[in-house]
Image (cartoon, rainbow, N blue to C red; front, side):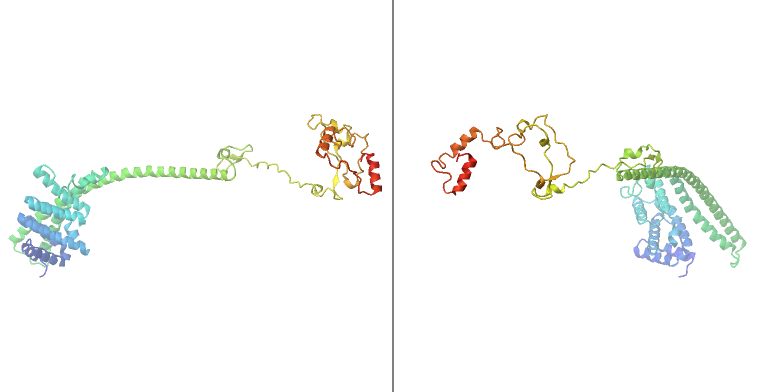
Length: 437
């Protein structure tokens, strides 16, 4: 069937509530999607003219068409239904029974969940239904427990800055839903009457059609003017919002610049402290000016003089003579500093404070092999003899002699000590011992 206005009206008249009927008509309409605007205008006219019971079927038809278009990514009917869907939904909802209203509300909720229409169009549909509920019962009723229209629709979730703009946007959606169909109908009627290819009707019929076209054009003009007025109010509100946000933007940019400068300063300070720590200085020393006035990298002063190096004791090896045996021919021995004094050995107190301290000698060392034998005469007080009274020099005290006699009592008693020796040797020993043995 070719596409004509009468064909569209015939399809809409034969529509019923069965799924087969709705799907069949929807497929025919979508096949002629290039006439989407004209089809939607005829659909809206049928919505206004038909009975209350038939309006729900037209809502179901529109639901099938827009959902299939959304699934197939064909936006012809989505664009065509957007200006008229709010008015059509309100027309179908107004005066319907509770059961029909509940079904319409369920359909609108599906559009919201599946994002069939743009947000402003969806808000316009919900707003029209809310207004009808308020005017009828004085209170707002929610869909499925208030999931769709609770809290006054979508306004409750909008920021406070956008609250004044929401009514303006809703008004624009309503004005567009009224002006676009009127403008489309006026344009179509004007093209018909002014088409040169069409035959001119009789004057009475022509005059009646011109009067009807005049009314249509007047209605379209009023609707478009109202839409323009509402849109200008929205633009003023948006400009105020833009001005406020622009001032806030400049303030935030200034705050950002200040924060960046502070961050860079702290990073630089942190690097200076870390460098001071790595160089062995404390953070406090690094922040104080130096005496010579040498500037830091950040404008402060620091000292260029390095700290003095610590005194290191030289490693002196011991003299070679101390590591050589005592009878080595090259071992040098120095004289006892006490040997040059005339203090008797017995009179020296090891712990006396008057004990002379040894003085370092600078004389040439004398080797042991070149030293003369010590003089052990009784007249030399520095050397002890067997007859000396000093107990530290080999002379046996009477107590020690008695002890030795007691320990070796009976040793060789009654025997000749020289028995078994050569006579000459024995005589020599007796001579040296003074006849004691």
